[in-house]
Image (cartoon, rainbow, N blue to C red; front, top):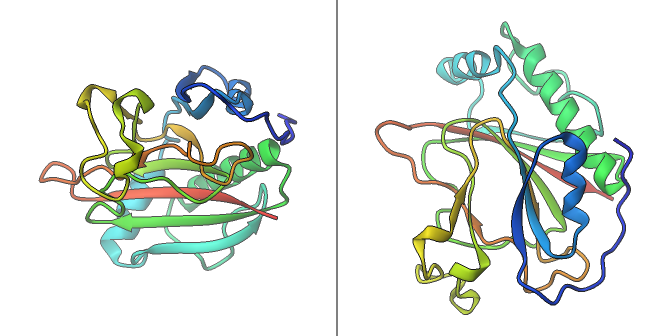
Length: 213
């Protein structure tokens, strides 16, 4: 891909979430009427096994944070040296390069969060331009259709007006979310939340990527 950021004209209609079929389709995020694009993306073989082993050993802790050159793996020593680490390195390289292609950035902030509870359980918006999320283990990000939300109640438990408006990603999916700082998107950032964990899903590991300019 070689898609560069072009500030869109301010949108005047209700933003929506769309599904991509190919990596190239992620460029739909430039549509001013789209504020979330999700691409079904199977987890690379061996990635979950590596993360399970790293978590079980305690070596992964609560996660890792780093700023990397787009298309580069995490720094040496950032992740435990266990069989399968190359699979995680390759996924970080691919996802950071993808965000760089979309935004034109050369540096990417990477957060790998290891969670035993919902990190942001309330519906909220992010003060970022564009964020890429990929859940590696456990339930993935949820978002709320604009028609089923009352933005005046953001920060409370009363944002959702209709539970049928909840959208859910799956582990491995690539999710692009527009935030409040995307040009022309103030007051229209994706309303989303971290899923609740339960007895069947006690662990969630998610990777978040942000452009650094």
